[in-house]
Amino acid sequence: MRIGLFAVGRLKPGPEKDLAARYLDRFSKAGPAIGLELSRVTETVESRASNADTRKREEAALLEKSLPESSLLILLDERGKQLDSAGFAALLGTFRDSGKRDLMLAIGGADGLDPSLHGKADAVICLGRMTWPHQLVRILIAEQLYRAVTILSGHPYHRV
Image (tube, rainbow, N blue to C red; front, side):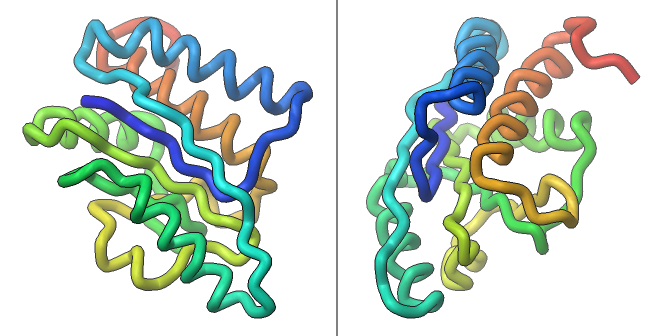
């Protein structure tokens, strides 16, 4: 299964970008052995619309344009279901085994994700109830993708 990451906002060069890239590189190297591969990272600029609802709608339209046909969609949203790492790995494993070829993980902008996306999502998950800066969310989800591969493959990286 090809996994893409869609993010509203761009990571500037620096330690956050380097760390996210390091985990995505690890995922790219370890994932194919268990049927998971990184397809792409799509970054888009935040909408400049004058109100939050319009900004979210515009950003949602960009996400929908970047979704491969028949792609599964996971939204990262603070109101989503809270999973532990094993639960996230199990979700990815279930989606991988479903026969779908593509999955997109979406990180919204400062205003969050448009409500219309929730009805189209196959899962809505959160990385905890706290609000995280965009840069940290990228690092966290990149690390969890790598961790999921290690859990699914039985690698000792993930210890309980």
